[in-house]
Length: 250
Image 1 (cartoon, rainbow, N blue to C red):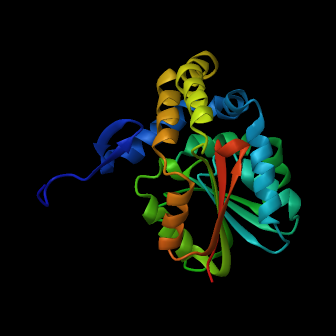
Image 2: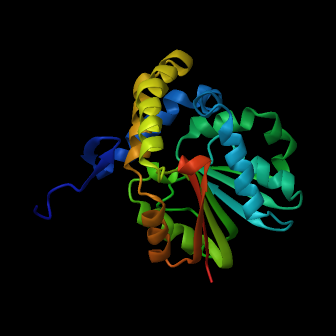
């Protein structure tokens, strides 16, 4: 490879130029924005709500904190955070404006509007000063980032000393038999469900493939440590279908 050759990355099981992935991901979420929340309930049988509550339990939001929720989409995490910490403030950042538009339509958004900001932006180049936030969260979004180490470096930069990172993401099931069964469900059912509910099979085929390409729990924890975070830990949810990762900027 020469210096003039384009760098490549993966988009599901496809290999694509790095500079095209963000636009392709944006296209996926633009296509599914209006049905995104409905599909989350259908795909996970509502369990994603339990996972997000578990995230809040471990995070333990406190009044006065400033949250940055990256790839925050329709606001699920920000709403939960602010309900547990009524005197906190949340900023939801997402690269897909149509996802933020759907979030603003929700009843929670109006009730919390004085403590909630919506920003279009890129996880790899956050439009905030160093040390701006107490908490950084990203839920089911880190696997869609073109360069995950860059996003983790930006998370570290915008957190104040003593700030906390928490990532909720689909992961790998340690039991091979359960992983096999989960893969059969994911690849055979979810794209069809996407076609039936959201009218978009291809976007959900990509989402399933992106889950399978994401690093397992130990390897992702190592990536978080390399970004500078300490006391890095993870907890498996539903046998490892998803996992919570926590790290601190100390």
